[in-house]
Amino acid sequence: MEVGIIVKHKPDFQLFFITLCLVAFGLVMVYSSSMVYALQVVGSSSSYFFRHQLLSAGIGLTGMFILMNVPPAFFNKHARKITLVILLCLILVLIPHVGHQSQNVRRWLGPPSLLFQPSEFSLLTILIYASYIFAKRRDQIHSFKKGVIPPFLMIGLQTFLILKEPDMGTSMLLLLSGLAVMFAAGIRFRHMAVLAAFLVPVLFLFIYMQRYRAQRLLVFLHPFSPKYANQGGYQLIQSFIAIYHGGWFGKGLGRGIQPFGYLPVPHADFIFAVIVEELGLVGAFAVLLAFSFFIWRGMKIATSLEDRFSSLLAIGIVSMITWGVIINVGAVSGLLPVTGIPLPFISYGGTALIVKLWSVGILLSLSRYTRPLSLHGVEREASPIDFESMKMKQKRMRARRQNNQQSAKRS
Image (cartoon, rainbow, N blue to C red; front, top):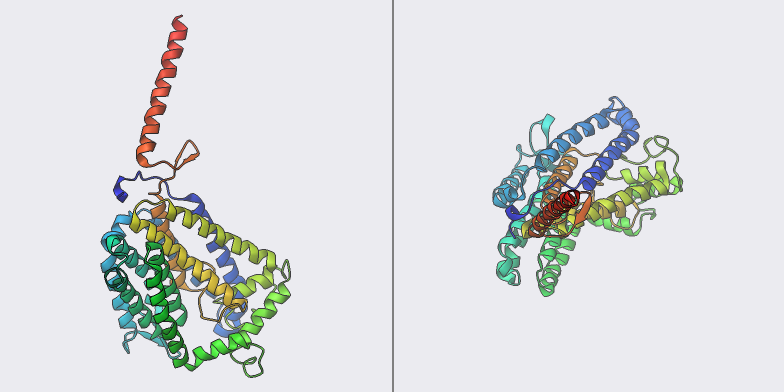
């Protein structure tokens, strides 16, 4: 069924509300965790990072409101163009004197006051492209040559360009999100096995090509080793200390000791450790519960869409947020190697926050074309045709009751 046939309705309010709650909580935690860092390291006011994050939240929310009113057909129609623009930006980043470099890392484009990371935008555009290809080539999905290779090549190319920046975390998130769309599209299990057999050796090759990546893996396995405790393992150890000191209810907002120069850059990728220290395991559980609710609403939207492109795109966006939470929390708690993935909506990072909010805007737009519609507060699972017929039946029933009442008065 095409998107245009489905009756348009209001976006998913629950998804909208939980997103605003996560962003608001993130702003509070960025301020709480970055006050001392802003004063001691940056030499600015205590609200320096908070103000920057607030500006990014404003841009992200504005884009979210705009995108939630853009029909999914627009992204389906312009999927190739959007992907090519971001692909060009990823190439420009790697060109000397064009891409902005900081500490041997080249990830940014634009003037110094308006820098942005194309790799963050590629997370969204690759999902749009993959959804477009798998929706268009639905009849070829079981063909490895025609249905699997073309979208995988685009995913692989963008992953490779991001690895060259280098940015292992974002490339991993892009690859996992893209594979989630491929799996949801229904590619054969043996084709997934072939891709896995190819990707695993390549992944380990990229890890051991750079010494710091291999060291991260060793630090993950032996964080308390004397060889790593004061170097690569220091951040992870401080994260463990923060979680231990947090207990059940935490030390209180703004009363944690890790932001006082112990945990490096506490407002960024390891902000979840500060959350546990200041709000305790109860606060951490509440955050994870909020993310779980977000994921549940997102998947409910995805499974209620009849248009294949829209459904795959919704699954891709939800998987991007899901993998972001899993990888970040796993790294902070020592269950996964540290990869530099921010906690969605909460960690400090302008481009990352903007892209996540714009992704939610698209997801809210998709939610306006789902099968479940609301009539007098009662949720329905009927198709648009059934919905219209139900309204006609209600009109006939009202007319019949009026006729009966008039007949009773006459008698």
